[in-house]
Image (cartoon, rainbow, N blue to C red; front, side):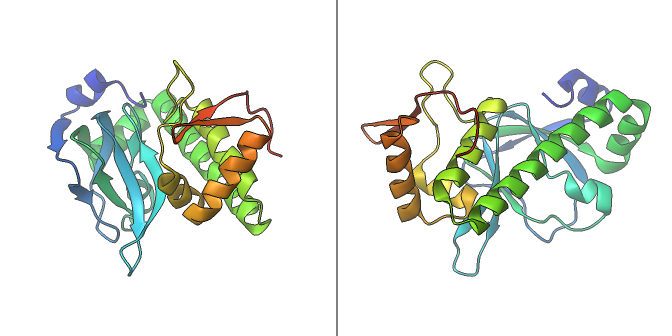
Length: 206
């Protein structure tokens, strides 16, 4: 969790419930709140003119999202959509910035999270430029394991579809299918009944 809920509530934060498919904010809109997910799942996406999605991030319980306009006063760079029934807590921008000014520990923690997300983007762009789809998928899986996201800790099953992997890496879904099969042949992944399991530790990008 980025910021303790009790801390947010003490500053006047409020809950909001979203239904599956409901849009919280759209790309291009002004950002007036700090958002943190309490339950459910949110996808943060760019939507093309053809209505296809490029997934910038999948937000899980306890994570914050949509922070960029709070720091640069520019519009949201992507759209936030509820994948399922979700509950968020939001704090108005002036109060949020005051909270960070008073609590450098929270500011530092949030900065580390934003830097970690930025590093993932650098790594993915590098692998796309190198035309190494297996590497792109491994970069994503390494990030998910490190941050304990979208992977069932009981059996190491990846809780993402191949389409979602494609949307997060900028690859075609057909390329993801071929690449995951190659990673299975290398004993890194296991595919059972269409589900992807991480078989071994991912210690480095190939």
